[in-house]
Length: 476
Image (cartoon, rainbow, N blue to C red):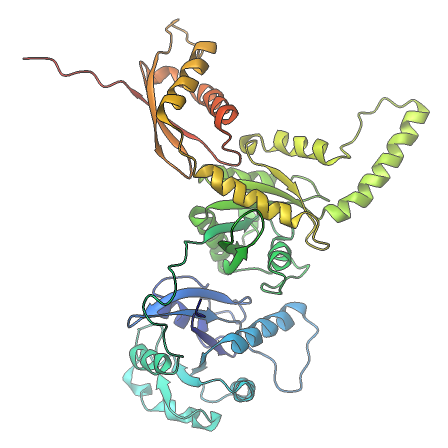
């Protein structure tokens, strides 16, 4: 399969790289803010311009002058991510601020780009009116030839810039040269801050694709990471979506974090499978339940991951030792959770509205059960695509209604007539009954459990829509 062409956007902080990225992509993907350093990870999007498809990559600002070093792990990692984007790009757009002219950091970025040997186009951004039209020539000392005055805010000058960039891309593959790629399985990795979401993505992809640090809130954008799963069947193209940790609403204290949270909500809404990451050390907190409730409200398929199990096992050994000591002393204190099965049952008890989701124990640090996690994701995705034969569906629901009736103050019985499956992912069923008033949430849960017993649907929410049976038209 031919490699997709890549255009990378680079530059010093706060020159408008993310705004230009969003303008070229035609939609808001990267967070745009006046504060320098908002973008940290590589953010990518599949884009088409003038009929030519390519991958567009946004990067964090390169803020280190030549010879400087930095102790800040996030700043260092942001630079590493930008350098990786430069290495993988076919064409690079160097973004500068036309109002500032050439700055010292612009020269440092240019030095790195000259060393890369890649084609580079200089885009002098923030040329918001005609007064700046001739100022782009001020950037000729950077040594890249022609410059383009552009405005991401007002959509000025992008046509000339992108036409020049496309001309420098490698030739597009001939039509039909590649078989059409299957739609990737979109997997959102979600949870509260600092539970190891980014570490899991890096461990799965065996790369430093997203920035990892012990500082909560390191991830800001929802970062799409293409990946192919090779376990549990034929190769499965996937899109791993790393998201910002969801904190309590009252703690979201600035606009950058607000937009990070909005990106996470959107990632859950567009994913096929949500992977809810918990911390084995701290257990399940109130915010974990709120994230789980959001997944449930969006009716997304789900796999629950208890991460950092390697750190919890040391605590488990200590708990076991204390338990043995209590037994010898005759203590009657309830035995703690010390096995995977017990902990998994406890997770389902705490997240009862996600009790259909499988629970996988992992460690991103040592790779514990990461292959099993990938197998569980593929299995859950396949479960959501099931189509139940109508005769078998009706037989199962008829038996379930016959076994148990919903409570009724009037003593009226629910009559089930027939059902049909109307959608997949999530599996959705239309049921015709005599009275929708008898069809309450508790009884719907009972029927969903009966369908799971009969057909699986592990990890998938089931949607039941009840309607009165249509009445035949009366003859005139």
